[in-house]
Length: 440
Image 1 (cartoon, rainbow, N blue to C red):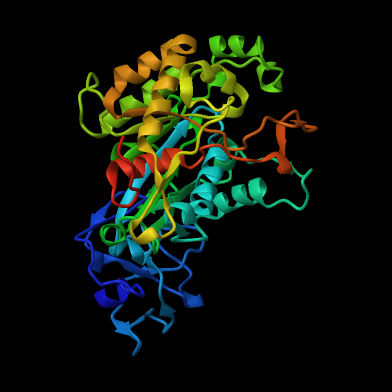
Image 2: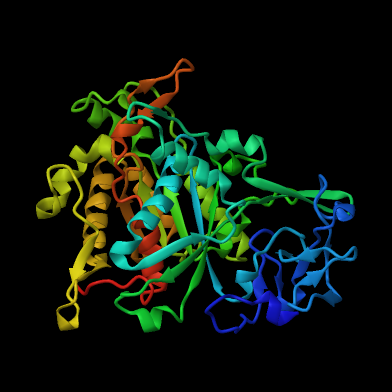
């Protein structure tokens, strides 16, 4: 059975010592994966409600090694032995790189997540990195975002996304499991396989470090009092993350807004908003420390990217701090050519020194226009492991408001700026062979 569980075309069948379920974080050996029945008469599971197929440990197999359920159905999908939610077999073969994305309501997280993964895929050929769904069905909400952003019928089509707070009400972001009389709501992970492609500058080393990228998106409401409970442990994954991305929206900060109103006619500056981003960030870091069993006075040492969305709306504020890095209010390419031996076509590599230079410029900008937030970040997190990265998921401002008073963008104007850089930065920190960089 173990051989069939880890079967992956073109890969050596070497399993990881243990799997951590991306839903409930139960740790177990690969051979304990349960299979998911396919026979219609087994549409009941005591742990997953609403007619889910039964989870079971098989005792019968086909000649090809596939599991058979108790009614003879051929089964290929697997699940966690604890929560019974689907765990792809690929997790028995690869390490998982978990990343938690969080931020306040209307911070642009939904746009950023869809654009981030889209641009990581689109630009993959440039730096010889491939990204692919592990479970396309589980990633459906991300696909919907990407369809809205990047696949509209006309240039004038409006682009609007469902906010995380709204989507969560329809159980899009969470899954319910039953433990006896108790029901738990668990966050839904988005899983992607990340592989080096032919021509990768460190291909032989990188191919030994294939990863499953696991991303969680947290609704801002989960950081309100009572948002984290035993029956709804929706933010505990943050304590297990290898990278954190905090979407800090400058357009919600009073001093920042005041400075921008004086120089911009962008409609986003006309609205009055009350920001609770400093409080939200502090609460998030408190939870990370609590669930790690750390003292509340300690700093979080997980690499943190403070993602500054909607860069297109405030680029002029950053420009004075960029110095010779500025390109007329835009950002330079985050990649550089690496000339390979033998005169082959150069390959793009990640320009980490440039990212750090831009990060320092953003830090100085925040020191002037959003000092309370900067102070909180550097109090709660390790400054040497914190980067500030400007992004724009759309590359343009809103085209207007719809009949419900919500902003929308024009499809033909969508041109993301540095959308994939936060994820590449975290991968570069942990897996420099997979995402190599130039030397400063």
